[in-house]
Image (cartoon, rainbow, N blue to C red; front, top):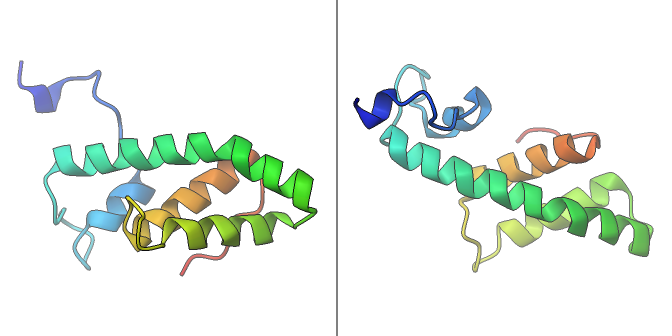
Length: 106
């Protein structure tokens, strides 16, 4: 069986594949295995940051939006492992996981 047809492959949500789509949205600008790998990294990052974000909010008294903005700044720093568009997606996903109001999309 072709690995691209493997039903056990992780399904990448449209909100993430849109980051790698042409302006018309009709084709990917990167091969699907690359998009899937980037998605797994970003999803893992969002999952890992849930506890940290909750803790920061509890300890600092900051609002959800302030915590998410802080996370966004950290994720777009020079040492970041994600691209700016991926960082924005991670923050939106983090908000979703925490049932917080997502920041406005850029």
